[in-house]
Image 1 (tube, rainbow, N blue to C red):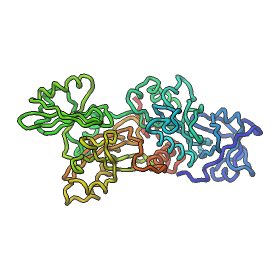
Image 2: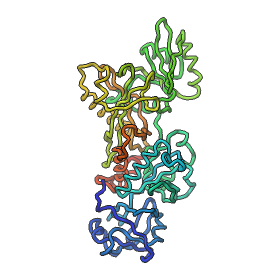
Image 3: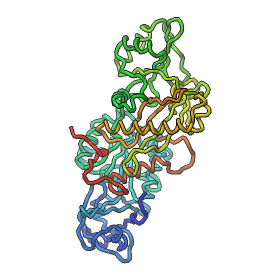
Length: 477
């Protein structure tokens, strides 16, 4: 995290020239900022040329109210403290960093859930930023203007309130649906505005299940983790797959949270079962032939793409399937690392372990002894294999995709022999914290802030000037 000496209170006054700033002498020495020189002062995408004057009496940074207005420095109720980073090569003094989170829901009339289910995450991120000299605001797609460099966003200032702020240096996309992401003004922000102003946007889009499997199938080190999988387009495919695997899963390639998943099973006397994952108890529909089952699902195939996937005999607690969610994030050095990994046990009468479908979470090493994993297999070795596999998968995806991703939820399964399998990769992992009722800032929030500081130059081991703005490798088409 940032050292405390890099964080300075920001004082806004009327008694100073609008084209000058005053900095505490000790701060100037530590930052290597020359006296009585003209430099650029930056907040978000806004820059102003200013003359730097030393101050023996006042610590921090003092500026005229007109300069604060030109930079769109937020006027908050409490004392504003921002981190400072001076780049001597560019003669640039940056304040912040300023980041923004793109969300889909704002309900200020509900003080407990002003941004829906991710409200607690928003509060934690705002508190973490305030502690470490960064500044964050939250905005919906409706706040995006056609050509504006200012955005109306929500800030945490005792309570939540809206302020007008400049476009940030970093945007974190937390839109919860592809429909929201595909709005014209959102696509314009991601594809044009961000490039025009040299803004980082990470987790730019949702991932497609089939796309992920196609990418990973070409990686010899990872392909062994993949269950047999293909897009379902005709009856012959289904017939061939079910002759090899008595259980299959049918998944919408653009689905999430276990929605729309079907399980197909071979039953006695050449019959077949079809059941759908849903929040209430599901029943099994029985078909006297595979052709009849295919005809039942065929109308759905015309509406959206489905991935047909080999069923795995995953470990269970009782009769409840267990899988594992690894949160893999880019850290303060810009490198992929494991932030957390938890075991998810399915709810009653469910064959998916998503929390949205009644699943529960617990630590990996507390869950494994309760399962039917073969007894000679070391629980610690499974835990380490899960971590290694999740990291390998995140690295492989990042190498193959053009877009900028900074965190991935990698869902894995383990069969009773201890083999690791990939279920799916989620580019919008849940921010709903059900592990504790305490209001501590969780590690994933701290890593997110550390990566933001890395991107913007405020973190040790930051990117070099030659690195691209997108992760750090946006390819131009």
